[in-house]
Amino acid sequence: MSRGYHYELLRKWGLPKSADAVRLNSEACLSFITFPRDETELSLGNSKLGGHPDLLPEIEWPVWNGKPLAFLAQLCMDELRVRDDLLPIEGWLYFFDDPNQHTNGLDPRDKGSWRVIFSGRSQNPPWKSPREHLVRREIPPDVPEFSRYIACELHQFPRLSPEWLWAQRIREEMEETQNTAGEEILRELFPVPRHQILGHPMMEPGAANEVRRSCELLSRGYALSQPLDKEMYESIWGKEARVWRPLLQLDADARPGMVWRDRTRLSFWIPEDDLVLGNFDNVWMIADQR
Image (tube, rainbow, N blue to C red):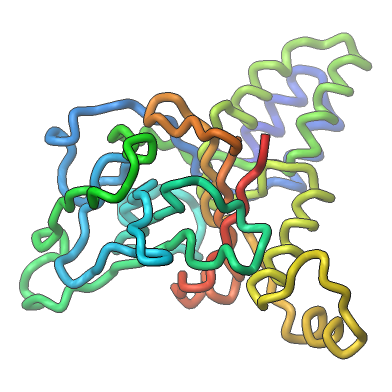
């Protein structure tokens, strides 16, 4: 879905300011909606939320403080149709989280309560596809029932992701022009629940910049309330400061049973340099609170 498509549509509906905004301030992303499925009907390695991860035998189930993490999602790279050259072209990304849902990523001590694992190659004979070696793992018994999510097939659609601010500005222009035709495109640009790979963060730019700052501080071991002297400030925000961008954003969703007690969305952020290199070891997760 191109910028030109939404640009022409908004202009046709009499919203020229919004058309220019979407054309200039959008990024390619991939959104998906979930459909519960009998997991036995899902092929090994297919993208899914919930259920059981399909892992290569040499990958160990991630733990934190001696307890296994809960499995959230499995993304098959060669299935993703996002128009972006930053993601690997093959392999799998697996997302895990604190099964007790006690952490929100706003304390440096939360590190390790989530994990993102990238698996692109098997140590088995090279004449076989890695997919042939995948094993559907059982959920460890220590994972509580409320964090054993229902297997859901993902129906994906590539689209444009405008900055969240433009949802409000489209509505303002609709009110100015007494035009209600833009509601359809708002539902398309800002779907709910909104699960998204890459693209703009699902929050206002000011809040997004604050999250980027938090990721940089927390990942370096600094508490958000910790005062910074000049040397520390220059070390963090000097030449070594990293550019953080959303990797995966998961909304609360009743279909897989991801209806968390105190959370509305899980956002996994990654330094852009790491994304380019295919390094997912430094991903930081921020949970939006109710």
